[in-house]
Every structure is written in C-alpha cells, then in structure tokens.
Image (cartoon, rainbow, N blue to C red; front, side, top):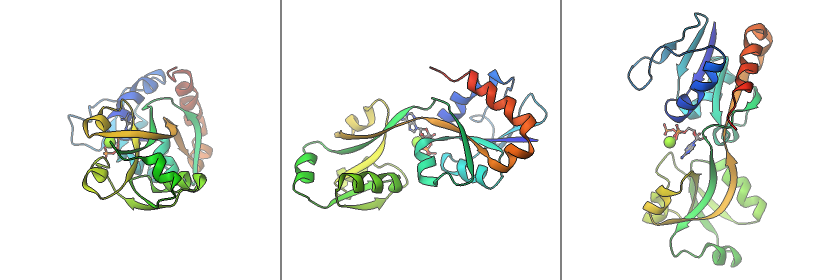
Length: 212
Ligand code: ATP
Ligand code: MG
C-alpha cells in the first residue's frame, strides 16, 4: 500500500493533475466527505488528509510514504528524514514582510529600532532578520497575521502573499520580499528504499506533469 499525505484546499486541488499523470484518480471529494482516508482508482494507493503543517511530520515518521508540502512548511519543519525529489511548482506565492500603511519600515530599520514581528513562520523570519542584522522580537501566531499590526500586537508581519488583496483589504503594505514559495513532493527515505518499484514510477510521472 502507498499512502500519500495531502492537505485540503489548494494543495489537494493542484496535486490532482499530477496524480492523473500517474494514472491515479481520487474517488472522493474532500470537500464533500468527512472521511480522512480517501480511496483511489488504484487499489494500492490511498490519500490521507492532514493539516498542511502536519504533512512533513506524517511523511517523516512513516504515517505516509509521500506527501505534498509548501516550502514555507518544509523550512519550518526542517526537512529531517525527508527526501525532496521535486519542486512541483504548484500553490505558488511569496513570503513577505508587511506593515501597516504609514509605518516607515525603512526608517525604523535604519534607526536600529527593535521591531516586534508576528508570524507563523518563526524559523524563516528569525533567519531573515538575522541576515539583515535587524533586531526583532518574534511573536508566534497560528493564523490571521494581518490583524497583528492593526491591533498594535506587532510592528510587522511575515506572511504568505499571492495577489496582495488581503493586505490591501487590511490597509497593509508589503515592504520586503523574503522568498518565492511553491510546493514540493516529499518522500519518506525508508519507504523510497522499501517501495522503490512502486514509488519511482510515481515520482517520474509527477515530474512529467509539473506545470510551467
Ligand atoms: P489552514 O489554512 O488550514 O490554517 P494553511 O494555511 O497552512 O492551513 P493552506 O491555506 O491550504 O493551509 O496552504 C497550504 C500551502 O499553500 C501553504 O503552506 C503555502 O505553501 C501555500 N499557500 C498558502 N497561501 C497561499 C496563497 N495565498 N497562494 C498560493 N499558495 C498559498
Ligand atoms: Mg491558509
């Protein structure tokens, strides 16, 4: 049995064409069922639905043989025990620093102000500001980062941006681009050895179907 870990939403939707290229069709719609294990048209392949941040953990510990996870999630996890053969070029966005309209980020940085930064991505944020030599106090959040600068919880946030509409709607501006984000295929290293005959063709089929 091959177990693939996916999160509901954009990653599930954007992985479907890659699965199709490998001849795999998921037989139930995650938005309509309450099931967490979904069968496919291949009797030896199943999909497990987990939170996006839990995908690397499932794959690392063998709860799934492979999975699809964002670079953001993988950087926070650390990637330990994971083989990362493919950048799938799906679920694309960027990780950025944003502040409230009217907050002069460049001036604060120039003056050496200690900034309070709220984010779900503390590892990436810590590294980014250390590289720039900017002193920060990081505040860990699990969602709705946009609210932090508006309520005075933080001076800045580090968050994912795609269209920028959420920032605009909350009167925030993007002031620094940290990195481009896309999702990657992650494979359990032991599974790759033990189930190589089944996994290798699957990885190769995925590779042929990566969107431009
Ligand atoms: P949840 O929404 O359940 O709290 P999550 O935000 O981690 O969890 P998703 O919103 O499905 O889950 O995001 C999954 C992945 O998709 C992220 O890890 C990231 O790589 C990518 N992603 C997140 N936001 C965007 C976006 N606005 N545009 C494109 N890709 C995104
Ligand atoms: Mg989300």
